[in-house]
Length: 325
Figure (tube, one colour):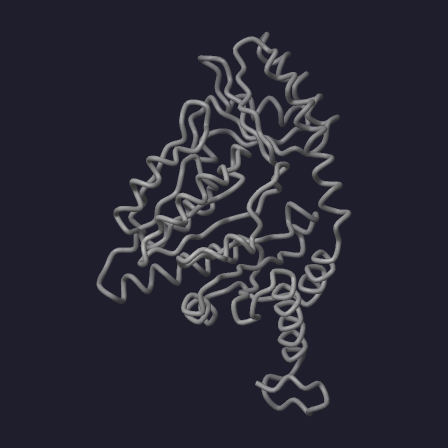
């Protein structure tokens, strides 16, 4: 379709050509940011949109070839990823994190021998906020089977240094990296994000598949975010302060905090305590939290967003009162 604004539009009418033009501008801006061809950029409606597009596309591909789609990921895992995998009938190879909720690279590498359709690497992890070490990412990408597409979800902010997206795209295997502006730039309401790949084959296959549509204002906000280095630093500052405040929770009897370096963190409640009951108590105190069963964990676990140091301190104070009841 010719997007020349000087032409009289007899194709779609209304403002559809405007959406397509801004989408192309966004695509080119992302391509310039990562130093790739614009054909390797796949805009979408946030990371949830990218997950839906990619997982549905490869499920359909496998089923159309008479095979069952398979997916490997570590658990606990972002609940939306798990939900979509279930909905599209993937055989799910779930690699449990260890007792400290750290990534088990050896078990993940062993699972790659089964040549899954997709290998999901959510880093930092949601819900734990723990990143996959660069050395583990390197080993996995080097061992990636030709048949497997690595799907690296980088939605969350990482307080520590990590392999740049450009380096991840430099590996030999088929790699897709997801980015969203929701957590890094406070743009959740804009619903804008993208995937970028190192494979023309992957890009050409995924591009025409299901997506959730585009919003001109969201795309423009995304382009502004690509140029904005101050907002991500503000987010990191807030996360650091929140995590320092959360350290106080570890001093409560029986409470275990698994140190995070990202937007979310997980607490384990004392034996016999219920996260669902705590959620009800916290709602009465004006706080919303996620209980373990909502995020694929047992009822002793809760997930917290690092909203701010003051809010986290108030939560910890209420938690202390709750545990004394």
